[in-house]
Amino acid sequence: MTRDAEWLVSMLTAELDLRPPRSIEAERVRLESGKPILLRDEAGRLVAHGSLRRLGRGWELVTLVVEPSRRGEGLSHRLVEAAVERVGSTATLHSWTKSPALAKSLLDAGFRRTRWLGLAVGAHLSLLSATRGVAQLLRLEWRRTAHQIINLGRYKLYVLDSKKR
Image (cartoon, rainbow, N blue to C red; front, side, top):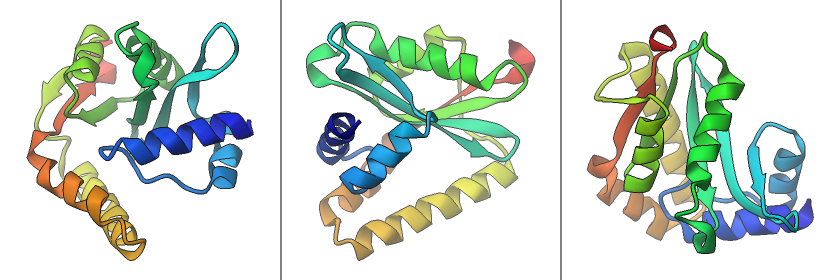
């Protein structure tokens, strides 16, 4: 699992749109928890990762990352399908992205683009985002923080409603 954690830290470090990486040990513990969605190649190497986070009565699909050399192979589609299966048909699932490839995967899985999840979820997300931004600044992650602020308007919200499945 240490090699998986090293891979994830390198991907999170390179992808400024994603959450900042934790230490290799912290990422290893998280990977071993069984919570993340992991896709491996034929040799057993980690090539794609996705995480779900509880948000109110629904779930948020966060931190999707695919090995750059494996992009275009449908791995994001497989991550989204696995997330939908894991959440089940009774909960709403949403995701924010500015990636056209991920947006296509979400739309193909039945998500719809929307602008608003409601006041409670919006307030919760705002608090989480502010907390993350402050933490990034305290860790002197100027480049990541600036990148995320500059691109804030480019992120689009996609929702898979439990009522529509």
